Length: 361
Image (cartoon, rainbow, N blue to C red):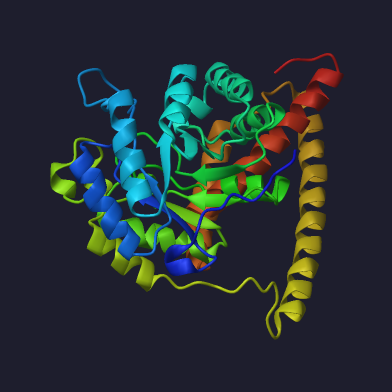
């Protein structure tokens, strides 16, 4: 995969973070011009706005479509900015390029649909334009689906690519609108380190009060930039009103961010990393020992003709260990996840033992 740099200026000329900002939806040319002028004052180099807005249910505001594209382009150009909008079909791509949009992005629903991504990739290839494309993560925490979308665009000759982390859908009431699950974008970065990684704190937060908190977390983890929703009057926005910032709140947030240096080491860190390595060695040895005992238990279960999975025992183990975790200052949910993974592997090994003897659970 060949990845070239995308020219996304940082706020006030700084190299990091790269900043893309603007309203969720382009609602009028006046709105776009007002926001663009305010963002120019904040040092933003790329103006974003949705022309087509996929809604979960019919009847909601779905954007002004092709008519909104000139508003975005004219506002951006008048303020010396680049323009960006979301595309989900071949028709969207052709209309956006024809209107002079500088940068495209794929939304979470589009990334989740390989047919739609391939259609967009084929259309971009046919256009013969190496347009910068930002790929948001799919709704579900499926790293392969996210990476697959990026690979489809790369295979079509698109080299100016970046990934945008906007969180993952979760059921019920949660602190975030979309769970960050930072481990997923971190793993994407591990696999494709040359791919720029941006964060969309607006969609993760879902409410403007914590957009800055999420943006700071992204900066603390070394993300390359931010994609933030900014509206001249969020309370009257036709889409995603709750998560959009005013231009002033956005400028304040940018100024409040603490940026870490790119250095990978600090005084004393090498010794601490060596200590971590020694602890990890012991953890792996203990896991191997635990699996050997688990295998022996599997043989006992096979001989006794009892089921591999013992739900009551598992529930008692989880509850007890999570209580211990809390007493030792560990996050019980973290320990629950670790133990669940260990248990899943133990069950798989025990099933293999039972099946190798010609028995079934």
